[in-house]
Length: 143
Image (cartoon, rainbow, N blue to C red):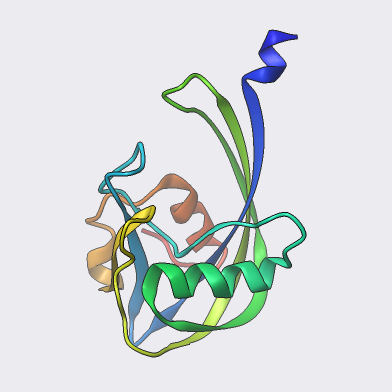
């Protein structure tokens, strides 16, 4: 029974946005266990929230941009044990983001600390989260 208490499942939604051969990415802040790692913009889906609305909200929070959501690309899952011993299974819903408009702005006091348009040929040099690499393959982007 105790093993069940140390397990959680999380639903997240993330977007892949490429403009002018640049990929929109966010960097994990020091408030996370993976500071400095780069991710796709997105995050947790709140209880009762539609995934597309969650993605719009998360993109706005993390990048300052207004996202136009395109096709559902697929789902990737992963499991990891957090530093507190909790084993987390994350189901990540991946959408294409067909446009992101507005002024790029970093999130303050959140799970990310930088939002950047990274040239595709430079993105492979960054420490990109494994789930993000798997998600990018859904759009035939290999890093």
